[in-house]
Length: 176
Image 1 (cartoon, one colour):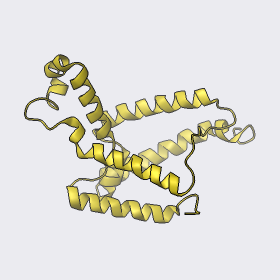
Image 2 (cartoon, one colour):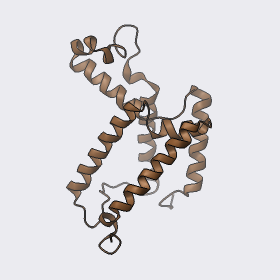
Image 3 (cartoon, rainbow, N blue to C red):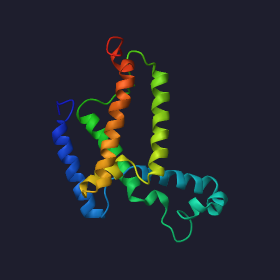
Image 4 (cartoon, one colour):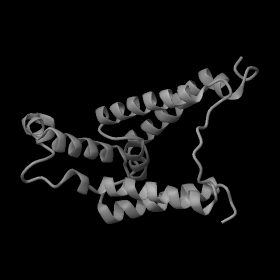
């Protein structure tokens, strides 16, 4: 492959086909936050089994009569996404370790804010009982009003936040 990036319209179309196939095969839409939850549940169950058994949250997810958390289909989905990203980067000769950042942001600052944003996103996904892919993409695929509202809220808040932080990414003149 010589192309550095896939055509975004083709990528969106293929994502739609994957979503349709996922709904057809599994009876569920796409999602990713459940894999992180499964990893946390499995870790707590391995490190502190007494705590997990006594906890109302963990005891509903592990123990006798429950499937092992790491056997959840979302774990395999996320592993597939990681493998697919690796193969895509390898095929397009884009496999390198880079921290994307603006001219006014240090690498340490970028990683700190990425971790903070990821933690907030994960907490929000747990409170909302699903992440953006589950709530927005899968919701819109079944024509759920909540899916459309979620997608508008995600892109609207992203656009608003980007307006306030654009100077960090674009330089002095664009930040005014």
